[in-house]
Image 1 (tube, protein in one colour):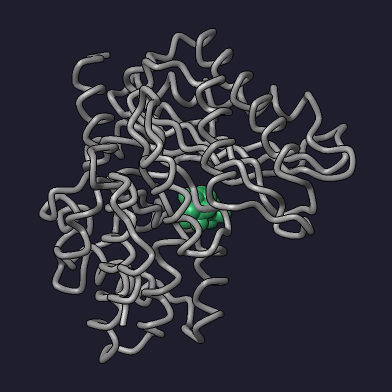
Image 2 (tube, rainbow, N blue to C red; image 1 turned 90 degrees about the horizontal axis):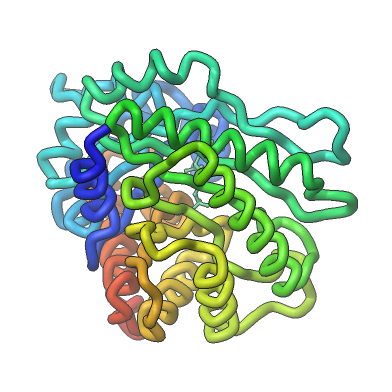
Length: 340
Ligand code: 5MM
């Protein structure tokens, strides 16, 4: 393992003013997104949609790296250029989601465990050869009646650490993504407590697995109340509690934090990231690794129609630019008006 080279990639992924586009929706997840805009979930439509983002240089200048799904990393653009080459041409880094989704964790009241470790050491060199310089693995922690259990926090942290160690051995930077979901009716303090537990356990397992923290990126949730909680939180509250949680759990050797949006509205995800960077005072770069909060607007503008590609690209550029500014603490709500 060349740690200096891994660290260089990790630093580039969280470079100020840029962030990561999570375009790694599996076939089932992209179907849900396409259903919402009445687009048929065919391989060609998935390719055309992703191609128009990767080709749009004005949007991609705010994107340090793109997380791809297995199908996409092997796909070529309509003119035969591999999609990974379009990403590289935009001075962005191709990455790959290597987990294989979740399944029920036996003996629990609804917890899940992320799959994909079997055969991973054989898949990683192929992805590297195709151009991937980082990978992603997502653990899913739900909050509800009787969940999460100690077993799920521990088993998921252990799997994340085994994945991360394997990636580094193959000269690929691991994005470590333990996501505490915001689906329930829990309050913000509960999200804080469960996220703290999850992150403490994750870094303990990363230590046991000899993962070099300088060669990874953390992709956590922000500290927010559940969507169904009656008491929602202000931007200041979310920013303060997220910084407090992370400074208590994440060693300063980690180069950067790239948040998931997790179902927040586009503008909330931007405002929260921006406020944290305005406050500052933490040892890592803080940026975005958004899926929905970067793509909901372009998907809607495009709606599967060729003539709408420029509108889709404009919408993608706008969200990428707003979040790029948020990574610097330089976003302002009035800049959102540029969207039209
Ligand atoms: C883009 O969605 C990713 C893949 O989801 P599935 O494996 O369920 O198809 C997802 O892992 C994503 O990278 C993160 O959850 C962050 O996305 P959001 O939309 O929460 O920012």
